[in-house]
Image (cartoon, rainbow, N blue to C red; front, side, top):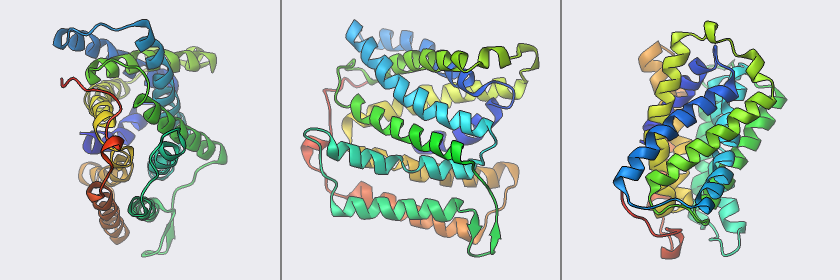
Amino acid sequence: MVYLFWGSTFLGVRYAVETIPPLLAVGARQILAGMVLLPIARLRTKEKTTLRHWISGAFVGALLIGGGNGSIAWAEARHTPTNITAILVATVPLWMAILDWLRPGGTRPTGRIVIALAVGLTGVGLLVSPNDPFLHTSSGTVTPACAVVLFAGSICWAVGSIFSRHIELPHSPLLGTSIFAIMGGVTVCLMGIANGEGRQLDIANVSNQSILATFYLAIFGTILGFSAYTYLLRVVPAARVATYAYINPVIAVFLGWALVGESLSPRMIVAAAVILAAVVLVITAPHPPEETTGQPVVPD
């Protein structure tokens, strides 16, 4: 679900921010998803949330949603090409591996993991490079401001992902996801209002396409995809979870080819093979038992 659904969210974000200010679009999506998830989680588990759970959720949600999702929406609203966005966001696995190593008691990445991350990043670079070595053409640009924001957002996402494994949260991944979504959504909405997006929002001019994209992102990006991601962060190594950042651009390219007739070049095929090889290296690498879990998990 993380591979497939999140691979489609780049296109969904592009449609959502066409007529909705980017940070408000992200916040609305997350709050909507959180309000759906919270009662479901409460029905499926008898666990009660505490004030500390909500404080932790606000901190992690601000990093994941405000920094991670917010930066992508902000950049795409400024016409940053989806492929360029993908390569900058694909630095997340590198940051996660480094930060997980640097934290107190962290696990140092093995040589195989480092090689796999480098191979994967090379594949993503080949996939979305503005220069096509096969066709000798150029396409796609990104402003320095958007590049900085996307890199900062990627670091925020990595930090939030690492912290979510080691702070006090509900045992239920579904309940934790609902808290992340609600608190992160509120945070990013406040960021948008502070940035003047409240004055930019014109309800009468919001298109049906943007509304449908927002609902799609809430259901498939957050309710299903983010729930799966939150669960995986608790039960498998961070480097393995982070392979989504290499698969998502591949999914985005193939969806564009299959659904909207975008070209599928030899470069894209080669890049996809390189990326998948890197994922296989990470998934099949041995991991110490203590690396695989942060706190007990109550299956949902």
